[in-house]
Image 1: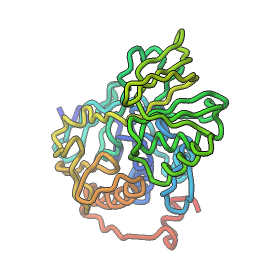
Image 2: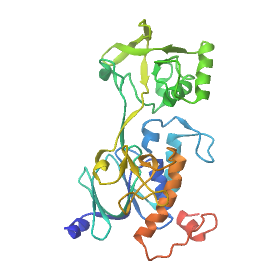
Image 3: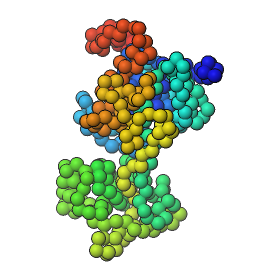
Image 4: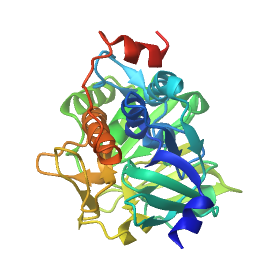
Length: 346
């Protein structure tokens, strides 16, 4: 049975589940070790949450880039891994993962594709994710027309009256980033305290004090409009007072609901819906399966892209040893190794 499964599958060294920044950088680290990668992602393009939720949002903690957008970071990573010719499979979900007698794996997707891989790397961020919907009656009819849970192109909000709801970094960041484009911005949060970066909160209050935007303490309770086109939002204060605000677009940022999906059924050790790993190899409880990026957990874990890059580097070394246990692996630097530079085409 295992032999037949392997014969009918696409052969590869590594299947990477997730094509976000960490999954993309894993291709680079694995490629340096001559390991071929296929990437599977539920989205229709690479970039993960960077592409889906904040493609134009500035990121400030990527080494050597004082500021870079999610889209640009994705493009730079794709450029970096191009010499290794990874193969991408979008709009796919991995539905099953079966270990073979020889320690390899058969990976199947919901499109009935099969991959025979020597190792599997889970770099699926938080798994499948979806924005949390505010509990406002009838909000569904306005979604994707006037209600948006992410900003893919800032230009689409130019010269419009915007109402942003939330008290975290996303709400404050988009308030500040969209302010120069919007006709007006109103920020709504249920209390005066925020969970966002203090500097962002300070900048927001400065705009309010200068009369350049409005901040309301309360919650949205009612939406008004026709044929999915929003024109008015009702805000209820803590004291019960109702205020109507003329609005073209509503941007609720209430966080994400994370779901592991089929990953939860693969027999891996989980800790609060995250995959437990060691910090030497970033291996899971199943040999040959690794987890890097936001989907893993370990003592001291920081959910940062740069942390995921570090995890990818150590994982790649361990994956190579798993695939070729008898091969002597000599660690090399890209700055001095002519062999690695040849692979990179430089």
